[in-house]
Length: 290
Image 1: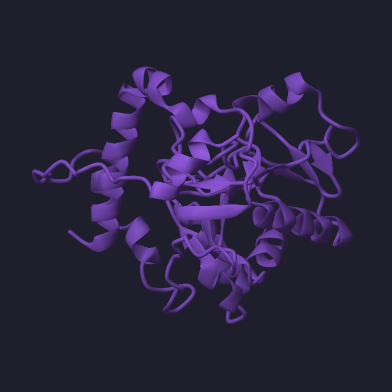
Image 2 (image 1 turned 45 degrees about the horizontal axis):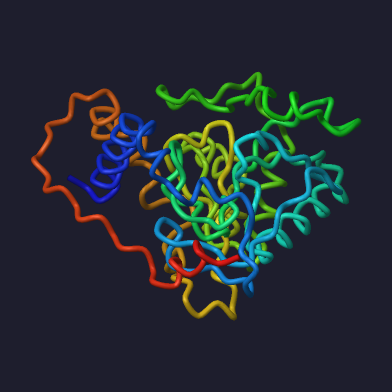
């Protein structure tokens, strides 16, 4: 089985398992119960899927070029490095007449594992930004009810890997390019169909697409992941993306092998249960800190 296939199998199994145990896990997840950032110097600690963040900042509900959504989930905190990036990106979006970004999940007040839907978002360096832009948010602040009940609009069919043309917004390529060309950005995850669309319309002017990576489930939002802040010595970075920006692993997402995995018809191999990773020792102090 190819590497993307193996990763996807592991991700799918982990997702299903997390949903089955979500209720009991929520009661046991101390990270989700802490509602305020720690009074410590800001630092992203550990890896994106096994870490925490000290001295996090809360993202404002609204500002130049952005509006938060789904704030009832209480996941609108991040490293000051992420908050600054999101404000800068939103300013650029507004200055270029690209609308007003709708920013969804970031991290919890002290990072750490989340219940349901995310394995990453733990170090305050990840953020989900919706492709859609609500017409109300362009004119006024959304109410608390509107922020939590606004509809997410998919750009691609999640199972068939086809673009939903009626939902396509021509501003999206420019927004993605603004984010990708920022040196603070390590990865941008999008649905494979959306990555292919970007490659088709970009032609040879595609170097900015190197950081834009195909990954399952990102059909209604793109996921921005930042590099570790330069001064954060306990933050584990990802390796730089190599290879052709529009070749390599993209075709696999449209292969028979992928669809067999997606539809549950691929032969399965027994896998040994993985030992749960220990969180970095510094995270224990973050969780207990005032």
